[in-house]
Length: 302
Length: 267
Ligand SMILES: Nc1ncnc2c1ncn2[C@@H]1O[C@H](COP(=O)(O)OP(=O)(O)OP(=O)(O)O)[C@@H](O)[C@H]1O
Ligand SMILES: [Mg+2]
Image (cartoon, rainbow over the protein chains, first blue to last red):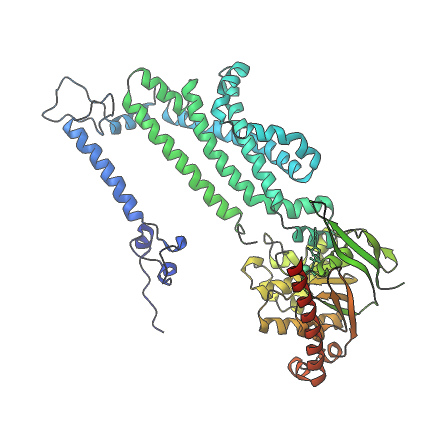
């Protein structure tokens, strides 16, 4: 049989060439897994957006107060007395000099550190609680009303109370994120416990496992995929919650940087902040997916 | 008394709406050590329930199961189980699955290693020891399940449609493997199946159950399992007495199913 030529990897990545998997399929419409990445079009979208921004910049169409120009160079038709802070230049200067004596890395690092702390503490408390609720009817009965009541409340709605309790310092923010992560992790862990097939538990007991061994070697690994999904979700939720919390009250962090910039009408810094928030949220998601593929290769294969 | 005794076991499930299902009524059986009993019956006649009671996963509402004179009160490694599918631990490799029992029981490492190697040889999976189980075919996975069960050297092996999810050809091969393991290890085995042919071929004894309430309808003593050890499966299954027995049991179960259907119509 003639061996078909393999398409180039970059072509597959861009989605302009079918990969060997999708090429075998004769039915592609309605089969989500046979849809290629379409990244070429994503790249095109990005280029068009940046191009539009640049054209608007050259034309000086938009008031920089509403939307900053892409780059700050002056064009012959510009008023030479009006400085034009460009986003690119500002980005470079933020990188090099920081913002208001605090480097950009510190702002970003502070935010990321808060998220990680909140998620880790939330997971450390939430996972055991979720396990207890999944395994023990007393624990379930005790915590069920609290969980079901707090679950639909968006974490942001807790900000006023947290400020009243803990003020606006570091502890308050981490506590807020802890709350946000706690319930997500708790529910994920409980769902993970409940998802175990009873035949696996029966098999383990019949092989001589003790209660603790069933928990450690069957129920826990079986719950890992759900727990990981919970971790991913809480990372995303906490990142969003944190930035919003920093907008309310903080002296460091991406959100606070934007809020200060707003007071000085530095729209460019605000926009950069938005881009950074999006980029980091995206990076977190990608990182978690890679971690998941590496740590839990059996996911969905039971 | 030696062996496995099922002593007047009844099981009544109470439904959430208050209704009751008589899954088993006064079932009594005695398996001597080393016997292989196949259990047949129409769907819903309580086969799985019976196995769950012997396995110790369910407490009967009346009667009891006894193994070598001790009452069954819960699962124990003296009674191994093999399920239809989905009972392997997909986060472990083949070898880790097989060694699970001995590891849980604190058997020394060197000994575990030997056991695993021996069993993987027996089920012809030596080259797959370090593969994750989800990469194996259905038939290979059931061989892992058999090996895992044997690793603990149980007195009794309980199998609930162990070959039910396999294709016909793989199934025939696996029947040969079950017979071989049975003869080599001398285990007492209860094997539930939906296939009349499989029950005839594997069962030294064959119990046909009837539904509503679940009970033993008829029992046979069969020569085919003995011939099947080392014999040719195809020629045994083509023997006139095998075919006669098959037809008799098929029509018996067919009648029961008919009865169930007409009962359902009236109800
Ligand atoms: N947990 C339960 N609660 C209520 N009824 C049950 C329960 N388990 C089984 N039953 C009922 O008991 C009867 C016997 O069920 P069982 O699963 O033992 O049948 P089976 O012979 O294994 O059937 P199949 O061949 O389809 O596997 C059925 O009528 C079933 O509906
Ligand atoms: Mg059944």
